[in-house]
Length: 152
Image (cartoon, one colour):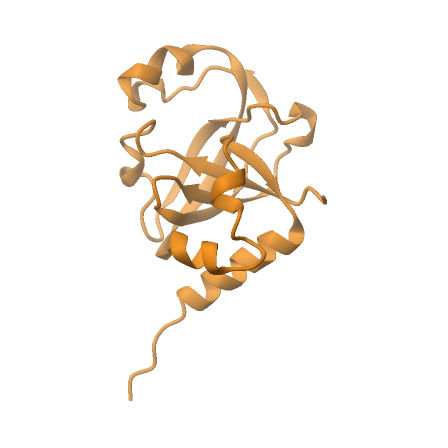
């Protein structure tokens, strides 16, 4: 697989305040734990797609704005109380700058795509790699979903 972009899974139960960050056309920056990814491969400038779990679909696009860093999560107080201690722990994390989509891509659209249908099932870690083909397919879905409708 060519490691082209990052897919970041956002769990609304883990991050209850997500809606204040991921809004249409709103810029935000958040630190995400990279999990089992190789820290040296997570560099500044990687394209990012944010997939909301719990059937939320694709919510935002962006890019990494740091290399991976061994650090705590500075926003630990905003996560679920059951996860706060873990967020205070030092782990490899990357800061991502993103903007919410005007029209998120429904999970049904992803499941209906022959290239992306396994994405919701196979990407169980917070951060996983996307090939350039999958990334470009997602961008195409975003473009089609967010085109203005001509009314005559």
